[in-house]
Length: 447
Ligand SMILES: Cc1cc2nc3c(=O)[nH]c(=O)nc-3n(C[C@H](O)[C@H](O)[C@H](O)COP(=O)(O)OP(=O)(O)OC[C@H]3O[C@@H](n4cnc5c(N)ncnc54)[C@H](O)[C@@H]3O)c2cc1C
Image: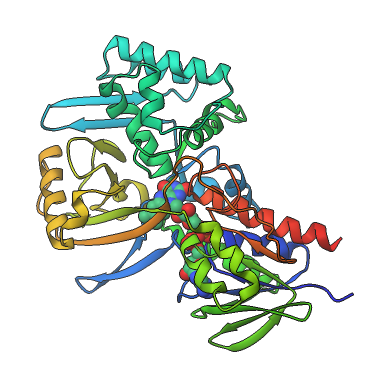
């Protein structure tokens, strides 16, 4: 029997991690990527400003200690976590400049879970004592219920049902939900949010002071953490990477599939579609036998993430590498000088839909700069700015969202990507797990 010839469509985290698993087992892999670079939504772009090239991530990403598949993948391809990721104990510092209040929630690295969380909630600044107790009560209830609920419902309803005050929701739960699910709490799936909490707090795999709830912040540009080392790894093991090569259609052929791309028609025995969900229907539109598959993403809606980069003088240093702002368009502020040696560079993140989408990039950058000036009075005028608007950054994690299985009804055709089967929101970890799962299905069926 012939060894499978495998095509992977899409060179984001899902496609690349599928390729890495398959080349490990000696399979012939061809990876098609529509754009000129690998990495998909977790990639870096080079932007020229004042005659210099600046590497800017397509969006500021945060990984967490519970990203076990991603961390294992980095380890496998020879990327040293300590060199590329800054590990911080779970923390949130949020300032409200109008009300002149600070909400600060910091867990202690040396306390074991759940005592670190208990300590963080009990000692946090900016919450009434009754709110701290309500949050601890809810976390205890969730732990007893193993973070499972009988019927999914919008997170906002669930939190009100569990007597979380609007103050507590707006300071703690809402930002956590936006950070984890990038979906407003009014429509966000409680169960998917609880899955993320469970992996952070219930699963106790800690070693050498590492915790699942830790934040892992990139210390260098994202492409050099994920896409570039993965690309080198799979190329060294024989994978063919076809950049700038969009697959325009998939057709069934004898014992496999023919793919049409810029290179013309090519034939493969197995195909992993690792594109974003919004691209699936178009890709298979010309193949009547696959029309049913296109329906799996019909109900999908998407959420934007805007990243506003502002360059200040090189000597800028904020008190925290990551600060939240409330009562502003700005949600999170990252000091890229402290994180990535990009001195003076600030990345501001705005997740979800809102008024900011109605502004021009210029007007948005000006408003954000003004918000930063109020929050950090020592700031000078920014020297330049760059807005990166990802209108479909993630799928909306709404209740009862159908997540298609990796194995499709068509033999040897698989779906990978952050949206496909799984309990995770749209994350790097969800994408990596999906790619590895598809590769494993092919490996198992071939043995
Ligand atoms: C601004 C922003 C911030 C984020 N923040 C975080 C975060 O903090 N933490 C976190 O874990 N996750 C975060 N995410 C989500 C994370 O980036 C994604 O979940 C993950 O990268 C998705 O990987 P993927 O491989 O499933 O899809 P993608 O990265 O979208 O990759 C799909 C690839 O397929 C290619 N493609 C599409 N159609 C075709 C075709 N016809 N032929 C060939 N190639 C094709 C695309 O060009 C793309 O490269 C963020 C995303 C964004 C946009």
